Length: 157
Image (cartoon, rainbow, N blue to C red; front, top):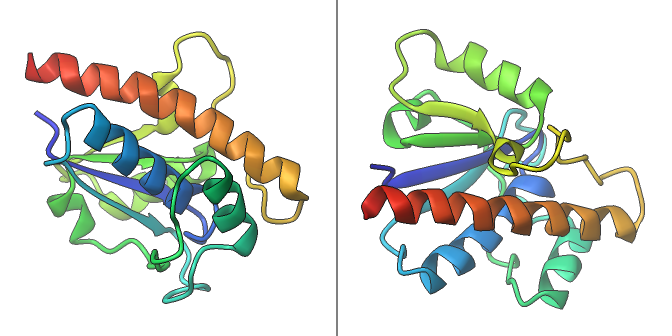
């Protein structure tokens, strides 16, 4: 049974904190508030910083509060602490698996693998784009998180 979920992107200021906030909200509403939830980045450039202002604004438009989240870099201990580590894209998935090593007990997957009717594997990185990219991130994350919540709720019976 999944008791902890870590969302991971490159810098932990756009996609993964958005996924953390969405999942926290949706899990709570689904009666799964006991799941430990966090996010991290494979890179450490933004450690200690708040999410990108555009992520905060896009999240606020949908009722998610990202203001108190702070970027951190994924650590070796995360592969023991979290049951499920969800990458936002294939490159981060590859980097996470390399960092985890062969003895990890964590399941390491792509978030969008939970979307049954899409060929899209990557949540696109909106950092170098405009506000529309941040809205697209929330659209994809909400759909994938909703599908993930169904799976987790079914596992609990």
